[in-house]
Every structure is written in structure tokens, then in C-alpha cells.
Image 1 (cartoon, rainbow, N blue to C red):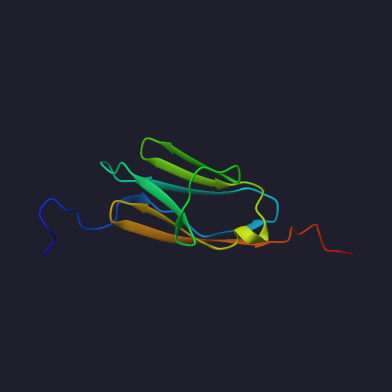
Image 2: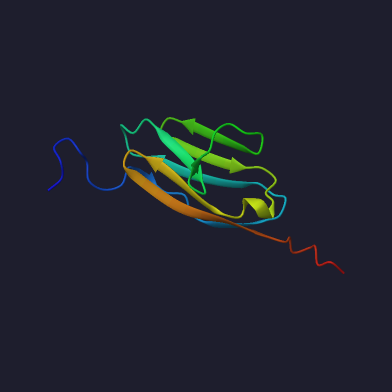
Length: 103
């Protein structure tokens, strides 16, 4: 039985999904939280992501976004977003652009 005052289920109405992007392009992840969830944390390999020139973290109302700029192969890893007691994991995969064949 859930604790009084504690909502069961997810704190997210929209969850970020894993993506595959071309090397050098931007990758954007989006999430929407349920009403009443105020604090959201983005994580990379289990570490909370703070301000950086490499990425932008945005929030507008209950909409949250993470944009990783000019992705490199080092950015291809596991990420997560935490809101309330809910945690959603997702992955960024990076590939060579189609037009760069190396010939």
C-alpha cells in the first residue's frame, strides 16, 4: 500500500527516448513532468549534469530539455532524468554521417 500523500506511478507524462545522431550534430532530449513536480535533475553516467558549454539544460513550466551540442563519440553513453521518485534512463548513440564514407 502506498504511503499517505505519496503518489504511485511515474512523475513523467512524457519521457525522453534513446536516439542515434550524426557525429557533430546536436542531440535533444525532452521530458514533461506531472503537475507538482518542481525539481528535475539530468544525469550522465550516474553524475548530475551541471552548467556546461557542451550542453544546455532548459525548463519551461513542466517541460524540460537537454541539448548536447556538436556531439562526439565521447557523448555516446547512458543518461537519465530524475523527477521526484521517478528515474528514466536513456541512451545517446553517435554514428558517422552518411555522406562521410572516407573514400
